[in-house]
Length: 317
Image (cartoon, rainbow, N blue to C red; front, side, top):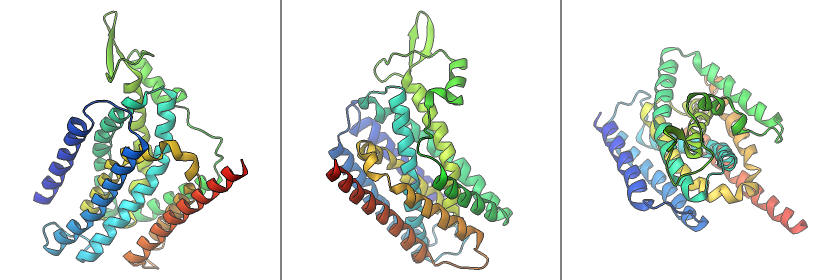
């Protein structure tokens, strides 16, 4: 319990420093600033694997999978890379949402910040029930595995032209029925008063749509990490580090989404791998290092191919 409480306190301190110190004044986050923070978050996440090693080496937390310290550290890194890679699709959708509701760049960080608070709560709930199901009903492993493999196949054959339209979504229509929505943005406020009527600004609407979409994406990402481990602390901590780094990664990739178009095939490969791993876990035991190597290689290949193809296309133009 002390480890869990300490982890939550650390996350809370990070969030307070983020909004209250480093981003107290709304501003446009440059690619240089986003690159710096993305590097910092990735470094902190990898360093935390050392903390994981120390925690499990000293038995400071319950170890349901009876993992060795090095195995726990590898599973954390593997889970973190899975969550980070699956966040790429989330970034595409966030960019579409911001564009649809015409959210100024200097207020986008504020929306993402509050979106992350909601994501932590929802991910925590989904992870709790996911671990509970797998531990209580072993057959759910096959259900999660089949779902992930189906998702990978669906991604492979889905046309790129089928684009998400936030203003036509059910979420937007429901918000409109519950509370009036103004088309004007009043600074960084989520609500404004118009003729004695309290109305939601586009910032609030974008926030709610992003929250709902995160839950939808979590339906893929949570089962994916459960294929690596059912240890609650490893699953939750790797998820949280990926979510905390999502904001800086969004601003890092937002202006370069087209350059990384081939990353989608990396995601398909990763989802297929973890899906098959869950389906075949009774027949084939894949070592932690092999899972980590495959996921890292898939991500690296996707990035390299995307950059190379982007360079070739620019040369042709």
